[in-house]
Image (cartoon, rainbow, N blue to C red):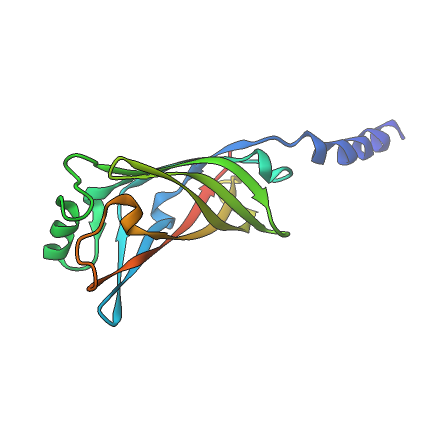
Length: 187
């Protein structure tokens, strides 16, 4: 009987004992992509090298934190000449500003699995407050490793001119949509 009471007490208290867990981002199963208008169609690209530090609290998402560092030199639009141009002073100026950086400042739960992640986005040394619209896609224990895998999707649209990425006005659109698909592994 005591054993049953202990198990029942654990099941009642356990959800309240949860805390933010540092998750390891699985970059092989994650991506950072973007889309921008060029004349009358869109150019899609991705960044192949990035690091994300993610502290996620399933029970209290508002206590979560995220920080991302994206290597500008890893930009890939499926065109080497364009990728080189994006890295020079006309666009990102990678030699002087090698990383795009996002650091969360607040997380607000907006629905059952949705979040607004407010944070500071730095591009070309210019920092602006932005809001990522995020979805927690769920979690599952891997059958072989027994580690818990989590999935997240987040998007935001920025005006590139706010960050002094203004080359090609009238040819290249002002709005850039950035999407993150993040697979993260708990302990």
